[in-house]
Length: 113
Image (cartoon, rainbow, N blue to C red; front, side, top):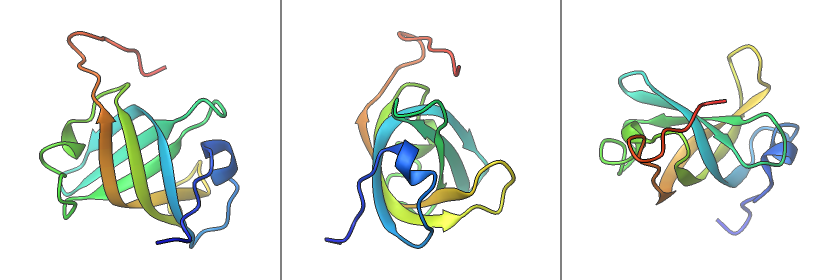
């Protein structure tokens, strides 16, 4: 794991797929689709975010990942892969999602914009 890239999202969006990456930022959106969560993360390096795909086999999937709220601080380690979806060239296939700081939507009602 010594060869993990730790780029800003701006650089990550144009990087080649197949690399191990670690990205930190804030959750813009988190959509739960049963056994998958699609998390968009932003870090302020550009207006765009990067999509992270987190699967249900992650250790903290039920306890933390499914409930990530807008504004929560996270660190994601995973593999940069080509995205099958339109609108983005790459996405991160998560191997670990660490909650660095939650953002309670009741206390901090943040907009997704």
